[in-house]
Image 1 (spheres, rainbow, N blue to C red):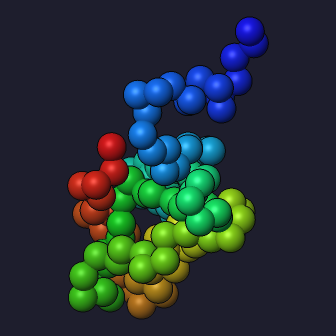
Image 2: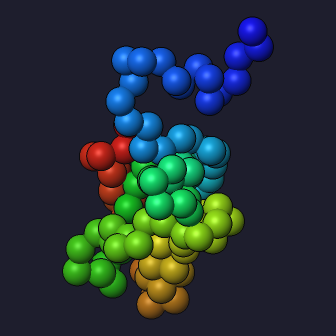
Length: 113
């Protein structure tokens, strides 16, 4: 028998498969050295793509760290776009307001494993 991902996951001891990692992307923002990781998942129950990110951003222009309220998109490229811009738009806003970039702006996401 040739194994496929689907047949491997048909084990009788597996109850629910809610999401499957599709891709992982690593990048830095501007002059900051902290590496940010984004993972996308295929959501099996409802369709679409979910993203998780290793860091959120809190610049001097923000009251608190931004945690995306919509961590999903109808297709993977849109989900990645939402994840990236959830960080870069606030970074750019702070730079345009005259703030000096600081590594402390990137807050580790305690739910990211």
